[in-house]
Amino acid sequence: MDAYIRLAAGAEAEVFETSFLGRDAVAKVRSPKGYRHPRLDASIRSARTRNEVRLMRDARYAGVRTPIVYDVDVEACTVIMERVRGQKLKDALDLSDDCCGICASIGRTIAMLHDAGICHGDLTTSNMILTEGGEICLIDFSMGKSAAATEDLGVDVRLLEKAFASAHPGLGDAYAALIGAYMKKKKHPEEIMKKLEEIKNRGRYT
Ligand SMILES: Nc1ncnc2c1ncn2[C@@H]1O[C@H](COP(=O)(O)OP(=O)(O)OP(=O)(O)O)[C@@H](O)[C@H]1O
Ligand SMILES: [Mg+2]
View (cartoon, rainbow, N blue to C red):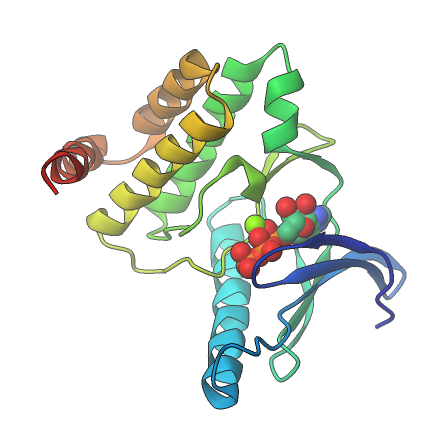
């Protein structure tokens, strides 16, 4: 693997442009963090790497668009995956004249993920790519969970609501379209609605 141009550098990982057997790819590398004990650091980084790969695969099996994983190096905490061409939803939404349509599609995607018992753990519009083919591709699953409880799914939706309000303050209608489409597609939406109310009330009194 020859990693070259750096596409992004987050708190935990760096993403490089690369290629894999002639295909456009990215390498997501979790480098050591000096502020953690080395053994603890290595175990956190490799656990997140394994978790991310497993959940990307599980979500894909459930029909959710995620990058195809090409290779994993658990020791080096590196994942080589398909480079998804498109635009980060965070940027695409503010420029689009069909925000509500795109948001409804996000809502259906998350409903499919949740119906497969997977919570994403960091649902923001920075962790979604609007592909050139118009699909919603979810990325960055390292904080996610399978066999998720209703509580986890409710927290996922609540965090998205908050992230959406701060990243896209002018797009309240689009968020309503998102949650409307989510509730329409989700199996047993009433459980999530109840949970969301509970989470919001909890926040109000703590
Ligand atoms: N498969 C991919 N195809 C294209 N771009 C990608 C891909 N994976 C990541 N990126 C780009 O790199 C950025 C950072 O990736 P990601 O969100 O996975 O990492 P992170 O937020 O730094 O990681 P983490 O929260 O796991 O520490 C994304 O916002 C996106 O722009
Ligand atoms: Mg991210």
